[in-house]
Image 1 (cartoon, rainbow, N blue to C red):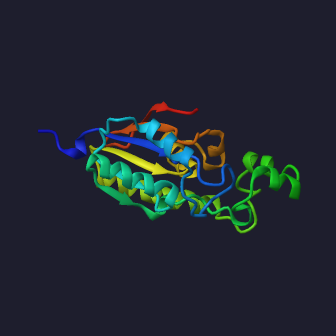
Image 2: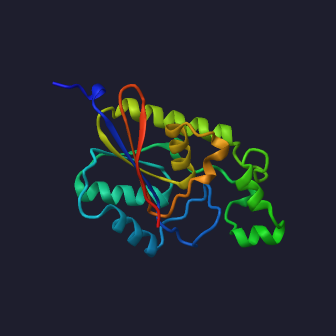
Length: 201
C-alpha cells in the first residue's frame, strides 16, 4: 500500500470573495465578507467538497467561509496565522483612487517594483514571503498525500504560486488573483510542483 508521503498532494488555493467596503488595500484589516462575497465563495466551490482538509487565514473574510464550508461537509478546518495577508502599512483601508489623489503614480510604482516602492510601514516583501512559505512547508509536511483547500488572500496565493513555479517574489504581482478564484497545484514527495489550473473572473 502506498503511504501518504509517496502520494501526490493536491492544493486548491481559494481567494476570499468581496469584503464589506469593496475593493481597497485591506492588508490585515479584519473586514468580513459582503453578501456578494459570500455568494462568490459558494459559487466557486459548488456543491461537492472533495478535500480532506481546509486550511484558512484567521482573518474574517477567509475563516468565516472556511468554517461554514467545513461544517457543511464535516471537514476539519485549521487556522494558519502565517497565511494572513501582507501588512500594507499606511495604505491599509485606502482605495487605489484615494492613493492616487495623495501621490499620483505610487500604486503603479509599487506593482512594478514591490521591493523598493513599498508603502510606508508595510511589511517587507521578504519577511512576508518567508512567513507564508514557512506555513506552506508545514502544510505540505502535515497533509502529505492529501487534498487540501487553502482559503487565503491574493498576496498569500501569489507567494505560494511564486514558490511553486520558481518565480522571484518581486515578480509575484504579475499573477492576477480574482476574488473567489481557485488555483490548483499538485506536488510529489520530491516537491516538484505543477500548476494544474488558475481561475480568474
